[in-house]
Length: 135
Ligand SMILES: [Fe+2]
Ligand SMILES: [Fe+2]
Image (tube, rainbow, N blue to C red; front, side, top):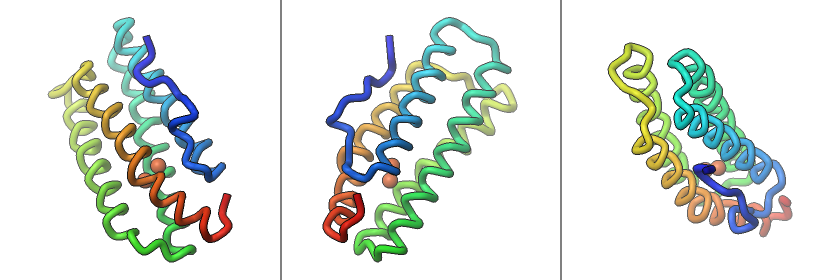
């Protein structure tokens, strides 16, 4: 079973952001599938690294749009990104040294974070972009 099913409810209305969110959801599902079928550490590490790198890239895309279009709430939004990256980097360090494993709790945390952040913070931000003519 997928961790997250993409639906139109996740669309924020800015194509570049929606495309990146779809890819993030795909990658989180791939990591979850790999965990569930019991793939080895190395395979999991590869997907985890891709997911972390793509998340950093995605946040960068959003943050660039925020500064170009002078999004009024950018400080709080960037802070949410920063906190997730800190939590994920901490987890990755523990995973790499063998002190942590990918569990359903970890995957559920990621699913809940993504869902809440997209539905609340990213939607609010995209609405501001839409009002400035960015689609
Ligand atoms: Fe965001
Ligand atoms: Fe986002």
